[in-house]
Amino acid sequence: MGAEQPVIVAYLLAADGLPFNRNERELIFYIGIVVWQIMRQSERPLRKVTRKKLRQAEEANEDLFERLGPGTGTDSARLTQLLAFKYPEPEVLRYIVEAIVEEPQPDETPIRDEYRGLAFVYLRTALDAFIASLAPQRR
Image 1 (cartoon, rainbow, N blue to C red):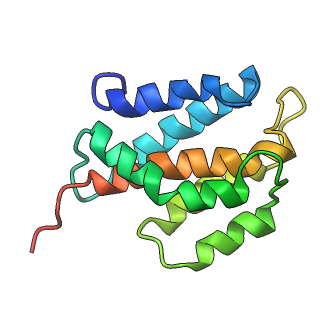
Image 2: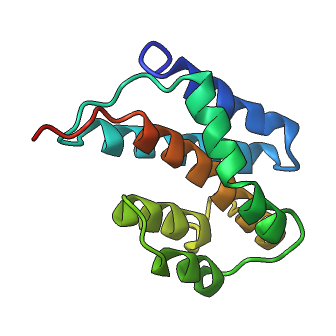
């Protein structure tokens, strides 16, 4: 992934500067890797995400970040409401939601409730950058 998507790897690793603990950062990075693998399987070739595409995705999600940022306590029902809108990759977005809110295994630590919204926006931004980096559809 580092060779194919260095901008996204740097972005996912930058979660270190956010209020996530080590386990949450690792889970976010893991979910990001799974999203990348899913997007690589698209019928449209996935190009490298540029800093410009990532910044555009961040700007597009700023309002969402403000509504779901740290301390808002986001549950699966609230995140699922966001899926009601037309989205180009609803199943990938659904995976992100489920991965963030699912009950962890006994030896795992979940993302704390107050940071689920922030984790969702962070991962949705990466997904939006991937979507923007898909090659145009052939006619």
